[in-house]
Length: 494
Length: 143
Image (tube, rainbow over all chains, first blue to last red; front, side):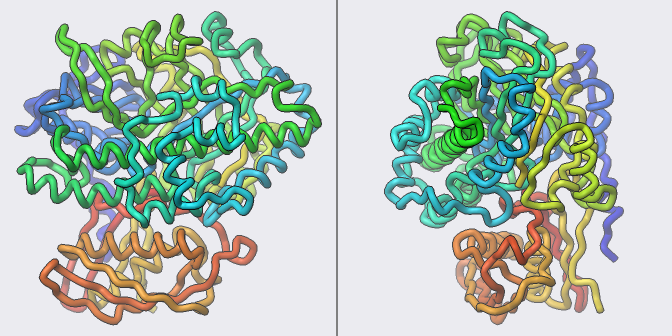
């Protein structure tokens, strides 16, 4: 009766041409509306998984976007999304092209930041449980979580949206040097809170300073292995066993509502500007239109909200270290390596056929990976390239990579952003039980504090692809190369 | 008892089929399923009532707006809902309009099971299939 099978096994038969060991092309002739070919970066196993859902079809679909340059990209962690595949990149001409909210997604500026400490595992281990519990109590997470101690007025929310991390630091929640170590220095200047609906603001007000649920997490980690010691040192990663902290979350209901509001506006724009698209979720507007300008200004608010959220959470992590180890946070280092967005659209300049073009770059589940000497890379790192931070699934490793000139050539300065699910949430719940997942992690010395047992089962590491493999493909192609692998000591989860 | 909804296989998110004899009933069951993603709705008491009104240009857009409005209610009032009654569904110049009464209680993590939060409703693979006395709606929630 459900027609389940019919919907499950709709295998895609998207044609692929192999152009390199890890590079595959979806020819432009596959669909008459494709303006450029699709390019998929994957090894055979990762590619095989992509053929079981609509990832490749979606890659071909984004090649339809007006004004798209060179190729539609699917990264090694690519999987089926909405309109865009997750792990998708598209660059469209600033004037002749379009901007699509689907190329950013609902969780605008879902991203990750990494802090280093001068502590080693042996220093932290005796107090690890206390530290994890303290963080869990200071950083609300899980369903319906909200803060009591950090409430904003609607006017303050608008300032946060307009000014980003600087505003949060001005409130005393951070250090001035944090700002320079964020993508965009923690603030997209285009942000205009007047373009954000009251509903989005109301959702944003209740959730600021919270982690959320699903795949979002906060981890205390250690440096497991250093692959490039010179670059690692530049990033503040000095030795194996060094303790780090990672924060993974996004723009909460504020960003989700902005995406949804503008999808409606873009649907009307598609009719108004007579844009032909293969999928409703690719709704978009010409780059120079009022609709595009409004979306970009509202999206920038959500980007700033997410940067600010991670900044505020950083403050509570530092506070937790102070409380547990009874010393000022500065004495532990706890400096910000980098904060990087995984879901974002913005204006970049890229070389296309020897010409420098201003583009709308869409990164949906993708990390910017700018190489050395790029002016957008913080001065401290400009000689080596931008830090790329790729979180793994719960209980597995996470990675620090570095952006490369090759990424500028082949992937519009982008690489993968995570592991990507392999097993559905339903299947994971059938197969695992939250308590067992927790126990298994604890047997490996990893402490887990989770708001939900159900999420522990859904987020079991076996439900995900191997992040190590995704990173290996990125490294082998050279679109971001390995610097260090991080291993979790404890996990705080929604 | 007849099946009101079920969870279908989807790699990353929640893929739901909800059933009803009418469009109204299928929409009510879609709402139940959405809250079942987030909690065990069997543990939620229908203590406080609220009214919801949404308008959209077609049936899919109406389903999207209906479920989105419920998410907004949950996030802004902190009430979690377990009972939904669509009292009126009518055609308007702009398309379709739905009025409903919903019941629930304040979300309390000590009493209510915490499952995964829903970020958004999507149009991806959304479909409304009508047969005589049997309406099926399918949709995906972004987790």
